[in-house]
Structures are given as C-alpha cells and as structure tokens.
Image (cartoon, rainbow, N blue to C red; front, side, top):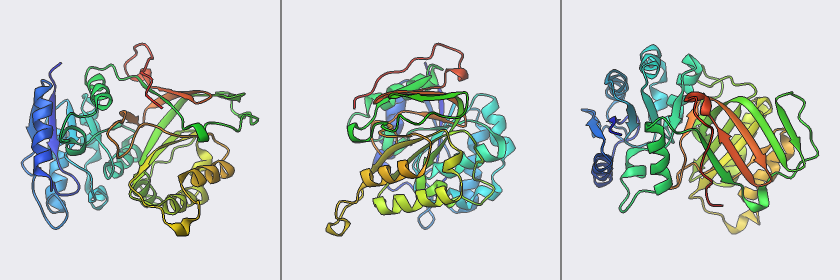
Length: 331
C-alpha cells in the first residue's frame, strides 16, 4: 500500500549521507512516495540546522499532509525546541491521521506531545538506522512498519530473558484490572509511554514530562553504563514516577562497556535492584531500542498487557478496532 512519507531532521545533523540515501531508496523500493524536507541535510554545529531551522522542519512536517512523518536520525536537539513547538498544529495533523515515528532523542518530542495534547505518536525506527543500513533492513522492523502503515499494527509479543522472567508471583495486585498469580500477570487499558531513559529522565520536573498514573512505562538506552541506568531509574523512583505505574518494560540497553572495577555489577544487577524497589512487575527483553530488530510502539495509547511465565503480549487493537494479534519474536 503506497504511502506518503515525509523525512525531516529535528535533532542531530545527518552525518551518514550514504545511509540517508539508502533509506530513501529502500522506502521507495517498498512502494512509498518519499518527500524530503528542505532542511533535512542542514548542519549547524552538531545539529541539523539551528533551532529555528529544525523547529520550522517540525511544523512543515505537520503541514505536509503526509501519512508518516519519519525522522532522519536521533542525536540531540529536540529538548531545545520544546517550548516553541506548536502542539495544536501537531495534534491536528495526528487527528487527521499522520503518524509521527522516531526514536532516541525523539522521546523528547513524544513526551511533550503526550503531556501537552494526549495525542499518540509512534516509537519506531529512524530513516538512517532503520532503513538505511548497509544491507537488508531487519525484516521484523520492516514488517511492523508495514503493519502500521496498513492499519494492522495491533500488538507485540516477545519472550523475556530467562534469568529475568517474572518471579515475584506471590504478590497480588490491589486494583481490579490487574491480576498476578503463579507466573501470570494481566493489565487492562493502561497508557503505554516512555522511550529513551536518558531523554525521559531529563524532562522530569518540566511541563513536558507526562503525568501518567497506572500506565505501562517502557525504557531503553544506548552507550550508558548500567550504573548510569540505575542512577536514572533511581531519579524516577524517588520522584514517585515508578510507583505510579502498573508495569515497567525494559527494552534493549546496548553499546556500554563493563570494567573489572564493576566486579559483577551489570544490567541483571540493575533489573534485580529495580524489582526489589517497585511493586509493579518489571519485564525484560522488549524488542525495542538501538537495535535492528524492534517493534513499533504507540506512545500514549491505551494497551493491554498479559504475561505467562516468560511470554509477554502487549496489544493495542483499540486503535484500529481489529482483532488483537501479534507475532511472537525470538527469545
């Protein structure tokens, strides 16, 4: 199904021009019409143009009438723009059916849109890292993207890490729409939100941090040592954010380097620490993050979550009204 995809750069400058071009060709090969923003390849310091340039690109994307507004890359820069984004314009575009898709630094935009308007955006690939790889893009990522464009993206299924599966089955949830017993857990109609942990935690205490109670929080990060991950989680914990959630989904935390000084301290340690300090279930191995194989997730949408031992199913069929089904991904 041919779709109109608008490519723009609201964050870091596009350094890998070859990946940018490959990504455009790939989307065209898949049958889509690709429109590139006039400033998509602009450069100012580390940014894709100065603040005014990138802000204008966001508003052009919203005005483009495209089916999808896809970021060229992440990096850093969106937090500088949050006070000047025309959120009503963005929300109006979303109401008309536009899908804003991105990841990493895009978490700032998604969080702000959710906090200011309640509108749904999509956590998913960027052009370069998703479609512009040197070789064939990940088939699961592409399938999820295609499902989204066809209105069939209704859920994601995966298997938790073996050592980090739900093991605190003695706790029974107090609220009526959540049940936990003997390796099973179910949450109904909870807002899915989150994204990159570093970006999200940097918004804490600002008007752009969503105030979600009883939600499902998903997190990922890249090039951050586990102790830094724990430190940011501690900030969310002490701020009361984590205790207000019905579940926490840990995605992929990649590209960090452990040292002999850590003496066994790693991401498993962090996961265990987190489970000891929050009542909500902490689920692992969500296929999302700075990795080739990732699902697309509706930030701000009502979702249902079910867990059976290591198997997890997250569904949001409410968006399309169709049957709630999703593929199982490899463990």
